[in-house]
Amino acid sequence: MESNSENITTFTDSIVFDTIKDLASRAEVGLNKYNTTMDREDLIASDWVQHAYEECLDMALYLKRLRKDMLAMEEELRAFKTQAMIKEKLEEDLDNKIGTKIVYDIIPKPNKKYAWHH
Image (cartoon, rainbow, N blue to C red; front, side):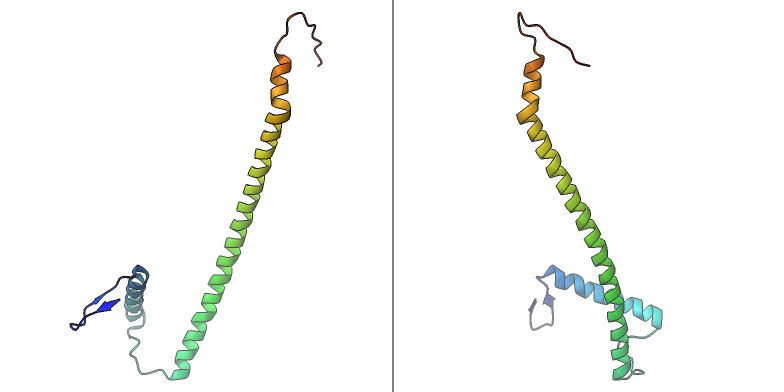
């Protein structure tokens, strides 16, 4: 973030800029919902702490839920990768051990008798 003497700021960090936009949007939502701003003076310090504490509790719940979802997705991905590796190994083994032999064995050879098994 760069600043000049005219109080004009240029943000070079997109994350900082996006966060500032989010803060401005939340301030607008708060003004519309509660008809007041953070400049209000009807709350004392312990009220602000209580509000922050309740927000942290909500955040803990959101994080716990997200973590649960992420663990489930990671487990699915791990199972998918394991299945893919097993399939790849089986196909490789089939190609290396059986595939070529089967193709070779079914090519008729001159003057050879064949027995068919059902």
